Length: 112
Length: 115
Image 1 (tube, each protein chain N blue to C red):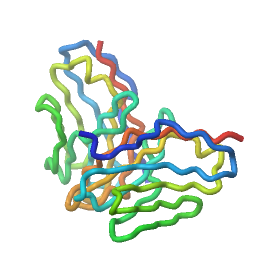
Image 2 (image 1 turned 90 degrees about the vertical axis):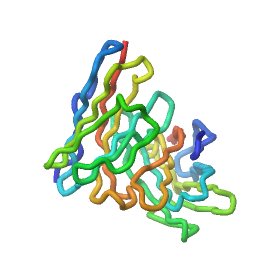
Image 3 (image 1 turned 135 degrees about the horizontal axis):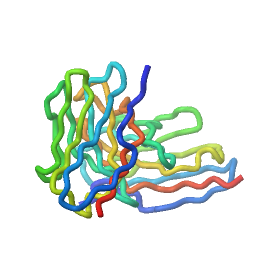
Image 4 (image 1 turned 90 degrees about the horizontal axis):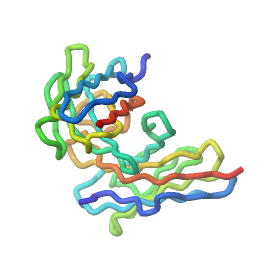
C-alpha cells in the first residue's frame, strides 16, 4: 500500500535546464507535503514544503506545485546545477501527526 | 548548535541477535522519530518519541522498540533480528511532536546488515 509514489526512479538533465520531479499520493487526508534531498552517506535534508491550502511555494531555485484534485505534486529546480545531483524524496503527513510517509525517491543527475 | 548524531554508523549482526541503535537529538529538540530505509526505497516510519513517551507507531512488529531519555536522546532496539531487517536506520529530531516535520533534522543513519 504505497500511499506516496514517485514513479520515475531517475532523471537526467543538463546543467542550466529545468528539473521536474513528480510525486503522486492516494490519501486525501494528507495536508502537508515536503521534499527532502539526500546525498550518499548523509541523512535526508529538508528542502521545501507546501500546505494543502496553497498550490505553489517558492524558495530560490526551488518551487513546489500542488494539484490537490489530481493528488499530485511536483518539484521544479531552475536552473539545475551539478550540485543538485542527489536522491529526492517527497513526503506527506496528515493532521496531528509527526509521521512522514515517503515516496521511493528519484535520483537526479545534473550533467555539466 | 549540535546536529543529530547516530551511532554506530555501520553494524553487522547475525540473525536472531538483538541490536541497539542510538541517536542524539539536536539541541533544543524534544521529539525523535525513527525510520527504516531499505535499499531502493524511501524511509518508512517506525515510531516517534515526544517527551519520553511513544507518540505514534508505524507498521512494525513489537520486536522493534524504543526509548527516549530525559535529555531527549533515543534508542531503537530490535530483537530477534531477521535478514529483512537489513537497512539504513534514520533518526530525525524536531521541536514538537505535533508539528509538521518541516524542521526535522535527520542524522546520517546507521547501516545495519543482518547475516
